[in-house]
Image (cartoon, rainbow, N blue to C red):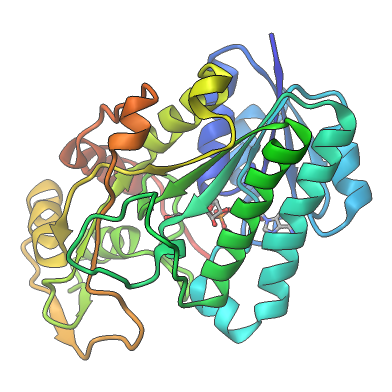
Length: 316
Ligand SMILES: NC(=O)c1ccc[n+]([C@@H]2O[C@H](COP(=O)([O-])OP(=O)(O)OC[C@H]3O[C@@H](n4cnc5c(N)ncnc54)[C@H](O)[C@@H]3O)[C@@H](O)[C@H]2O)c1
């Protein structure tokens, strides 16, 4: 069976990928510097994986982690828009230079395939009412978006120039178990769930009619496994949106979560946040044509997520 390196494997998405790979019989190695990743996320699998504590910005750490693996799921990044605004150099080092290190090391070590966690942020806020299609010209509006896009271009070029099988997946608003609800940059779903479970009102910036294409982690994991195993002619050198293709407003989201948690606490509305985009929705036809269909509905994903937060009190 193949050996797979998961960079950022101690993080929210990476650790869920680690569990799925192990369940499928892959050998798994993790590279993480534990900047936002948590040791608890790997506690249950520590004896089943190789854990390398190291940094994507250090080429020797990356070469060490890549040595002997067949494929890489590259999730490691400084994954925050506001952090990239405060400190664009750190964002660029981890997200662009770190990705280039992964690609150089992968090429030199004869790795077969690299799958990269890109982001809907590459689109920026163009055409707010239209579904985002991969063929659109990206127009990032944050240093984070620029970095994710630059890394995507490196992925494409390493396929084009060196024949490495690279696949970039643009994730849209991922949610699910292990997502941190308590950081200053926490995403909306874990924040809302923990507020409701504590009987406190969630805060909505603006009128709550802004919409997102919320994507359950189970679908992101399945999409990565598809990108890892699909025939090269279907996916290599390509960029795909990884999302549901849905459009859910924050008001609808609160209503779902009130129903699932049984907490009827009403949200508090406050001023819109500058820079927030109104609508973000993916066209999902391209990845569908390459054989991938997300199978877990938003409501089922929210149910599983609420169940997880009921059992795990997460502190920062
Ligand atoms: N969560 C989302 O909705 C979302 C959306 C689009 C894209 N993404 C991308 O998915 C990936 C995973 O994000 P996540 O939500 O799981 O975030 P996360 O913070 O939980 O995971 C990121 C991981 O990378 C590690 N890391 C950061 N810098 C590193 C470095 N220099 N060297 C080694 N490890 C480093 C962190 O310790 C952490 O374990 C990121 O690339 C992110 O940009 C996430």
